Image (tube, rainbow, N blue to C red):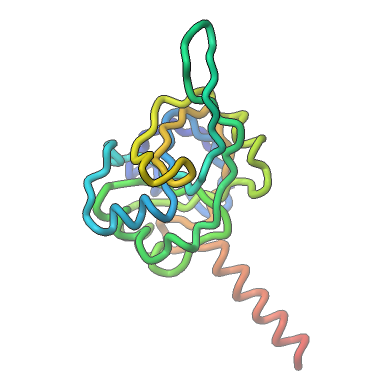
Length: 194
């Protein structure tokens, strides 16, 4: 296990160098994308941004408009991860079709996404659930928003982050901490029932 600092966009080689248990600090651009974004991409809509080499953050951030020095801009007040399992039907296709190298969320994902990580050189990164304000502190600016017709939580927000913390819980080598926990828990339960 290592502490790895990465700046987006990242390469396939960088994604493949990561292993379950590595702590990652991300800097650079992140794009948010939840259910509606994945559904739209799954149905063939062209994304309004280039996702190649990027990391999608399963997040519905809390945004407010503020005026600073006479300039109106978006500011992020909360940006905790949302449950990723809802994207399981689509995530591997987004990896394949758009060349993303990482996904940030909480709760993990299933076998389709894990197979996509292996095939397309991608990782799943677990962010801290229940810490929306802490996560927002690592967002230094909001550069834009697309697909606002989906509603603010479902839109694609362009976030600039500095040392955003997460942990690799699914890697491109076929390892899944979530699967390991399920197997260990199932074995422990079976032992208790015996």
